[in-house]
Structures are given as structure tokens and as C-alpha cells.
Image 1 (cartoon, one colour):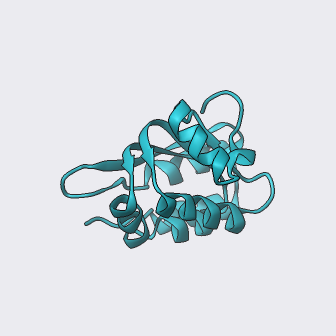
Image 2 (cartoon, rainbow, N blue to C red; image 1 turned 90 degrees about the horizontal axis):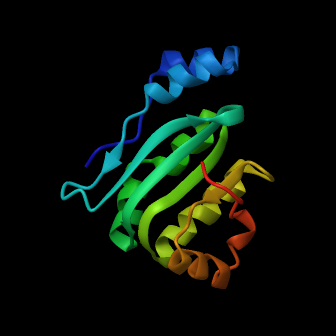
Image 3 (cartoon, rainbow, N blue to C red; image 1 turned 90 degrees about the vertical axis):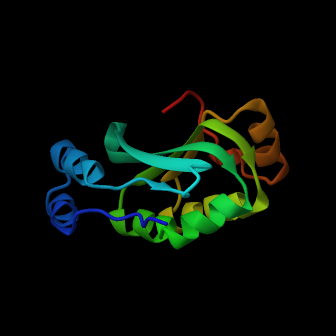
Length: 141
């Protein structure tokens, strides 16, 4: 199991001088998180207006959610201080455990600083039923 981490120097530079260049360096220093069998994966990219894009792939079931928690994903997202976008384009399944991660992240980030993009029609139905569709942004990341 890996842990989501980043370069402390890059983080300090981003906090001191929040420019697109320092944000790009911070995001480039972030490591991916995956299970040993690569059942799911999250990678990071810098989006417009200093948004941290978390691209998920695979089934976001209970095991994936436990791995994300073990990887410290939510804590890192809180520490980084940027807006967060969860890109669900390559996600085929969402469990209640992953919905919890979405809720916790949204609450930690605050109003307008968390978005979900590109959910499949099946995943969008789950988000809608759970009342999380308010964070689904129009368009993609």
C-alpha cells in the first residue's frame, strides 16, 4: 500500500507564492495511490484556477475507499489548500464508502471548492440518489 504524499518544499512554495508555476510543481510532486492489484487508481493533475484534479479509475467500492483513507487522501487534500475536482470519467462503480469520502472532502474544502466531473450515467444516478449531485459540475476536467 502506498501513501499519498507530496514534496514539503513544493507545498511551502505554493503556500508562500500561489502561482500557476508553484502549483504545477506541487502537483508534479504528488504520488499516485493504488491497491497492489491495481483495482483502482488515483492520479493528480493541475487544473485551471489552481484546482487539484484527482482522476479515479476503476471500481470505487469499499476496498478502494479503505485504501484511499489509508493513503491519507482526504488529509492531503485538506493540507494542499487548493480547490479539488474528482474526475470520475473512468469510474464504473461508486459505493457508499466512496460517497463518504466525497462528503468529507466537500465539507473540508468548503463552498465552491469541491466538484465532481464526468460521472457515467450509472454513477450520476448514485450521486443523485445520495444528494451529492449538487457538486457535479457541467463539463469535464
